Image (cartoon, rainbow, N blue to C red; front, side, top):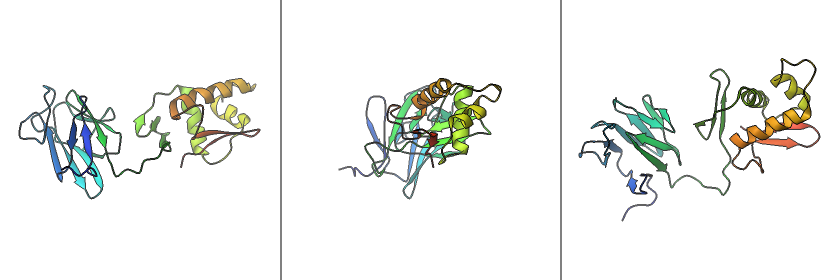
Length: 202
């Protein structure tokens, strides 16, 4: 009987592939623990390695690469519950039963201003220039209330005559659709009535 506390992958057919070895080999060759039927998969394509309670995906120099949440893995990358792993043409979902689950998990927001990247739960978001400018300003001042005047000057620096409240409110609304699990009940970008907005990301 399989220990249900063991992490596992599910494939597109909902088959469960248990990661009960210290190293699980993935590839086209029949000697692998997880065999990929795909011409885009190498015979020895990747491994999933357990290091204590942490799980890592490592590419083995495959021709077409291994991907985590749509991005190619260079070296190794730690897996987290819900991550998508693509090997060849097959997309697996990683499940970690040890992960503490909550009914409404707090979103994990990462903002890299230098790289121009914003990630939500480790997945890269596609933002407009104004949406990025807004989240970058709020992230820089996270935990503090930012007034609409401050936001207007930071996001629309090219306009000296001022910005209307509705423009800021519309931009906040659009950004929430991309960074909130439920835009109607925001957890990250909250309204401080009469004062402005605050980003609560740690």
